[in-house]
Length: 289
Image (cartoon, rainbow, N blue to C red):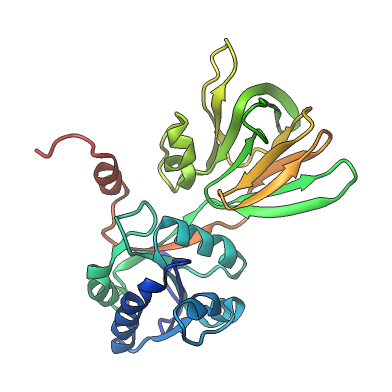
């Protein structure tokens, strides 16, 4: 099981547009420093709370692990932005328990004790590597942690999406859009659209149609992560949304290619953290016996 090479420096980012998070950060920073950890803060977060920080790249280079203080969205952004540095990321949740950011503010001291005792694990989560090639030959590459969504540009239009796997056409989706999700993203937009939940360490894509305009039975489809998925549209314009954060316009003749990235993202968790317990709490499953 992978472990940190050393535990000396933690790099932090904070939930954006929440300057009121400053006292929480200062308390957690003091807890980290009391254990002998150096804490560095990304300059964008530092500016928000009126202190000095370091550039995001410098933070990623110098930190042994990265910390998001906020919710799942804050952690998602950190994972994507820091992906090239391949540093483990841990989420401290400043609100309700999240699927990803699962350390509570009250549990920080306990987490640090476990960290130095080696009582933690580093999970490797599948990432999506994608590129959009325009009919003029321009290529835009990206990485996604949760999902890639192709959707209609305006409410009055329907999206039409041609889908191929390993070069062979298999379906044309008509409706509000199509979600291509990782197992980590299976509990996000895909779930609300009727997709299945998948254990997050699984290596697979989930293709979930959004409000399909079809009399045929358009069901979610799960395919192995070593397949290459190609998506295009004969429509004048559709929108590709990456992890709900970046948007790209696609026009007729453009091709979106998706494959599993060669390296996954690293999430740092408490050793006893149980995915099914999180599901049970978040989704209010069953009665306690």
